Image (cartoon, rainbow, N blue to C red; front, side, top):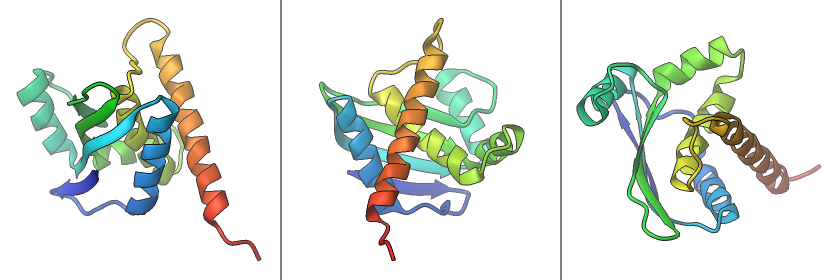
Length: 147
């Protein structure tokens, strides 16, 4: 089950049923099943607090993923800073919605076993994010009624 929460921010403009279906589809491409996933959308200040308290990191980030996976069932808490997503979208000259979706799936890809800290891993993660974003576009095209 995938749940969506906010802490100190308004819920971002996402279609929760669409995101849930997309996350399940992406997980399935890695032979994973979705267990308990909680998205917690928050501010920069909240993500900094979480980063300091649990990871002993003193900096802002777009997402922190807490991994509770067991076997092929993914589970976790994903804290996402909407402030940092907005900043990143401006910096990368990308639409806010695209950057939001990229970060939403980034945490799921971590839970599926993809890392991005070691040599060459960032490129693997970016390719996986792009493939997942393409899948979302494809899923939307399949559900959009044609004239």
